[in-house]
Length: 377
Image (cartoon, rainbow, N blue to C red; front, side, top):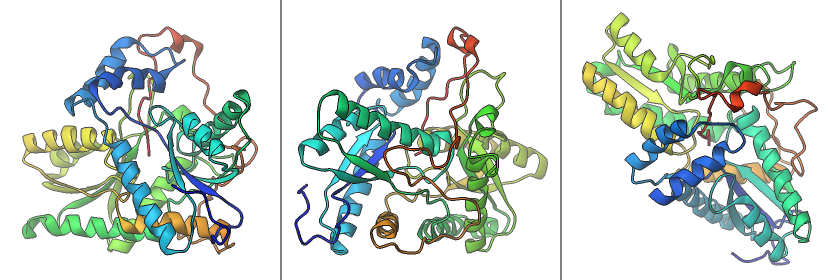
């Protein structure tokens, strides 16, 4: 990756940082990774063992880093095609390559004004504000080690970007086409995204926005369904964790499939993981393993829709977001809900937006403590 040349298209920004969640790339990395994710939350060891088993089932490797590197390669190609000569860096919150390490390298390379693409389409604390906190942490780290200052400008949320919606709709249609012909008309379209505790839902967005994360998921699903030509569909949730006494967004995808089968005799589902950019652990475990196993026991057919991250259209969309800032282009969007997320140096979108939820003090010692240990990237 080379620093930009004087004739580069970008006058304002000299790099792009792809910022993500991170994941282990070997069995020996699973436990340290999970400890990073849950640090300071009082999560009991047995809960980490339970989640770790999901990773060990796949050889201790999360596909997330590999898939993010694929996104980066596609973005680099699209940047070059549009005349940008800016390097792309990669950093994670919870595992190698760490975001602080990426920030150090950027500062050493002479980067002073970078754009940040976070691998989440959504508002809310985990989907947006936590990435702002990551940016604040990177800047604090650079100051602590005496490195040159880097300014970071985060790109906006993109849950309703036309390219995102059209590509997901294309993948939904392809999944319907894979079903046996006699089941296509009766198959039900189900969208799924990462669940969150209800007390987190209540503080997502602002009082004016309402619960922005869940509302954006619902609007994105409706936009995709409309593009496909489907008027009757479901939005459900997955990957909840922690104490069963803490309420989360429901229904769960597996529970919903069981109910559809038992109540309506449903035999076929097209399941769209709209909340996830890539096929990382929550997709390949919750959908490709748990959901598929339950469907097999019931004689149901599930067509799981592909995720959008590896597509060329996704990379094109990322550079569209850069163009919006660089060239002051009109924001391309199809929805009506607030779209935010683009701030400088980790500032909140608006005062009080998506404040971190307060965990009960007892959760620090409760063996059934709420334990959200997954990503929504």
